[in-house]
Image (cartoon, rainbow, N blue to C red):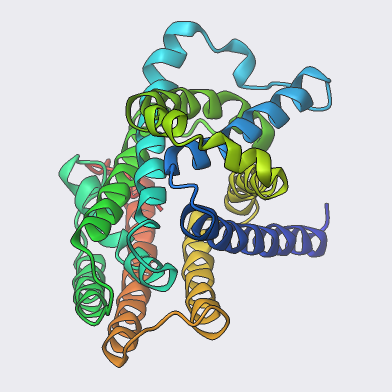
Length: 325
């Protein structure tokens, strides 16, 4: 594949992911609130179930052959994939519950604080070394996020707590992934085929523990039967987001994915305000703008940190940790 073709390929992955992710955000919000399907774990399990089902069909039909996944043993799966699946499931479930309490625009603003949570977890677990510029970026990010939260009109503590609990779960997932998997990376469909069942299993446990009784008593499944198209679309968009996330990272880099993610979040905020009349205050706009400055400082610090780590390795100096880019 030529360099031009690779760039076009990467651009298609980025645009596809941004559209699918944004569409899923608004559809989930609609289903959870306007449609009255207030069962967040059940809803997000549909995307994982679709991811596993579609990837299984593709693998078993021979369209995609397992490479690294063919030699996986039950013990290896239990010790390496299951812990990652557990944190992923918790992150998905809590993130979806957030939409019951907070507006779409405010949630996207809070997502700007993800690097702060990620750095705290990775530095604490010894998987990343504290760098002066990334620490500065995180400090600015934190100030901006706090300001955006202060300016929120419909602020609810339970929603904010759920959001940051989701972000901590995602950060721990990344830490466990880095620690257990190292440089092992699956191909796109293979990754879904291997990883999705573990996350889905933990979501099913959560559904039976926290949502099954209400689903049964309130006849929640009748809402799916009444409008199956909406829920099938949510499941398919969930598959697309999972698949295209891997595609963007594979065809570009994790740094590019983070930058594109922040741009997408900004567009979602704009759409939420202009089309869906979500209310935001001047304080929130100022806070989010400060967060974006902090994000730029943070990402520049990550690039400097990666170069310094590469230089140390080239000189034969083994660092205490690897930077997770």
